[in-house]
Amino acid sequence: MTRSVVLLGGPDSGKTNYVGRVWPALDAKKGRLLAAHQPTDITFVLEVTDHLNSGNFAPRSEHADARRDFEVMVAEKGGDETSIVIPDISGELWLGAVKNSEISTDWMEELRGADGALLFVRVGSDQDVRPLDWVTSRKMLTKFGAEEDPGLPTQVMLCELIRFLEVSLADRPNGERPRVSVVVSAWDLVDPGVFAEGPQAYLEHEYPLFAGRLGDVDRLDVRVFGLSVVGGDLKTDVECRDAVQEGGLEGRGWVAAQDAAGNWVKDEDLTLPIAWVIGMKI
Image 1: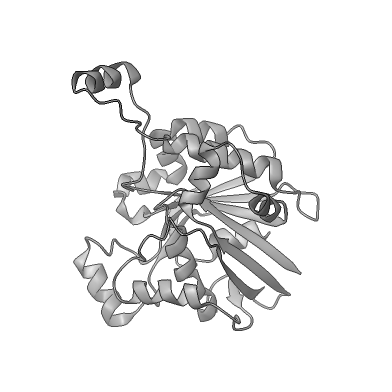
Image 2: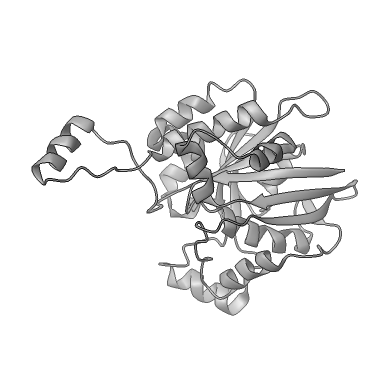
């Protein structure tokens, strides 16, 4: 059985770095999902992993038109094997689809054939576009003689991506709603107080329109996670960067998830958002 898990999100939302990090996690066979066989072609994934091992996040490839798929046979511990296809589709292409209010036939077929999706939004991204106070902003732009388009607000794009998933994802084979993991990447950047409140509360504060949309979705089963691919910011955290360069990626990175008591905790299993999407109990 082949299951496709689609990764969505705008530019610089963390999709590619996650794909590059989740392969070593699958190969280590310590999480809920493990690699049952070596994939036939993971060239682009290994390129991303090499960047991370060198102490750098992968460079943006958001303007590339070609899609790159990561296909791997996985299994639960002691369970049946499942082939998972994860298409890594450019954030620029997703953004263009939203701006033009249409999605290509190929992408729509990919969504219709998918078991679920991971939707990414990143803390502190310089690609994040916030809604403007149009009265104040237009006065300011007029004063300086500029009428620049600030771009589509990020939370509007996220709402549209949810709409794409609502109209395209099919129900699961057992009749349950399709699952979507909303992944708030770079979650290591938030302070302890924000971490304790959780990524759902973060979305409600930073992206209220999007959070409200998630609360009004009946067609999808949505769960929110926080994510740190290496446990720190390789750009600014010298200690984290040195540790990765010296010791590699093993044991680094985590997913923020709720425990049985409702507390947000760090789970070292980076496969968690995918495992939940394909139907595992966590």
